[in-house]
Image (cartoon, rainbow, N blue to C red; front, side, top):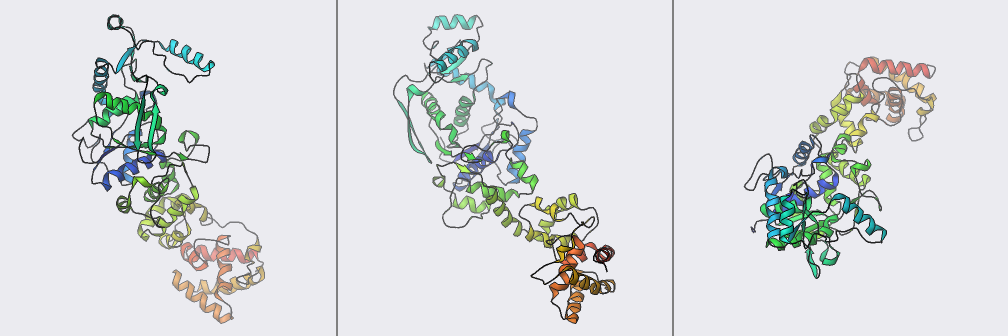
Length: 483
């Protein structure tokens, strides 16, 4: 095996990219990049019944969007391709038959009906369902005769009856399993297709994978993997098993149960870099207090030994907080580009979007926060005049009437309807009346929006709405106030 670190992300194209899968991809990428190695993308599509059209493209698009670029893969090729498992089918049966010849595997002719009956009886006896080894010791003549007769078969791994299989994991340490607890797993199914576990071992060896990063649910299968490596005389890779991503203390996060996928999060307005940053911390702890990391910084600080053994609870509030930090740090033009679709979905009238975005950027944690803040732009919202009452600004419905009556001629006379010009004129009017700016501008904001909290104060809203709409809404507010 090469001294160069080689890792692989090997998803199955069965739907959207689950956040747990993306976290595995990130950790696998970081392990390769931190050590100056190669990151390989392999598509594992042997489970034909679960394949979803277009799912492979989702994998490619997600990895590219998050910056997890691969060195070898289906679309760019490489020295150990093909990188789509279904295109490697000729390899697996050959290797399984090699194990049969070495006495490490055997042909099993048991039917599905027999296996179902066997497992049902074992359950009734309080046993864990397992294969009973019926075909394990068939003589070569009988095997040859049954194969010649075209009898359906699978190829099973011959697990040693006694002894212990041990392995070391970077996260979980030294693990030992009694071979008596292991089942003679199927390597080649009756349709000639390899099982997931067998194809993984063969492909990982042939692709020179040095570090295997995957979920802790595969810990129980690892002894069988190691027995296969030993049976072939291959070097065992370094194992890095990651804790599961949980919805809560009892339930794993699952798209099948309606939990958010990466695509769902992006559609809601989470930024790819923020999602990736959050996933880094979902089961992994950096040194120090810093939590916001660029991908390049992640590569520098990566240490798989800092992966936790405990399940990682998905925390939507923490994700929002990290996303908010990324939104605040965006250049204004980039925020405008990302916010535009959300603004368009909420507002049909022409407004000053640059000014709106200046006010929105510090007021949203996720881009989907934008539309609810803009529900008044197309038409003023009905509201109770009690909204004008504000202790801090010392305003009441009565004082709001005075303020708007004083503002109307100021706004009508305003030649420059930009925010700064409007604010200067309103400020001068407040000074002339011996009032603070808020006493005058708070009622203007309520009159224009029908809300007490908006993306921008009264003068910002006036500039966004424009002269005609602003004057119409102020007049309507005065009518409501009896002016």
